[in-house]
Length: 129
Figure 1 (tube, rainbow, N blue to C red):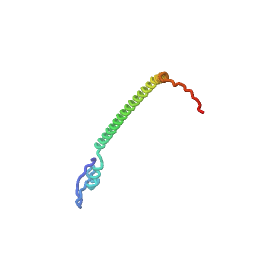
Figure 2 (figure 1 turned 90 degrees about the vertical axis):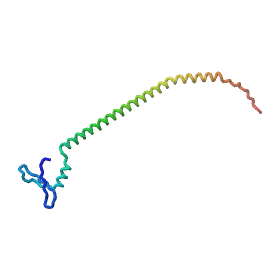
Figure 3 (figure 1 turned 45 degrees about the vertical axis):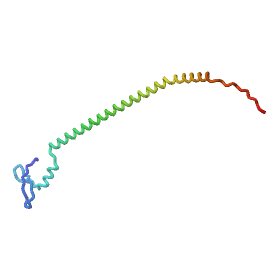
Figure 4 (figure 1 turned 120 degrees about the vertical axis):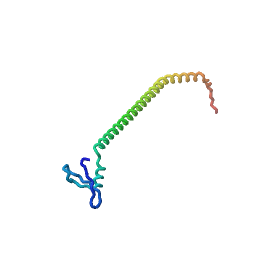
């Protein structure tokens, strides 16, 4: 409060504030209700400084949490990429290893099948008349 106020009452019984000048004469007369409302609406310098401090602290906390979350997600994505790469390499290696083995196995199976299968004797067919 920059100025000191003296309390008085009007003829009707309403409480008043009398604001005085430096020399002590009345500068302004305010109704208590109106002056009190204004006082409650206005914030002091300490309150404003405290609110600003809280706001910046809150912003910092939010920013920090966001950065942490981003780092976490980036780590997970990197790990997932690494796992996918590893899986792809593994499958590719298996495919490369199995391809020639399959061909030789097929050839061997065909050879043994030819040898084992008995050949049918050719029949002479005669025409019926």
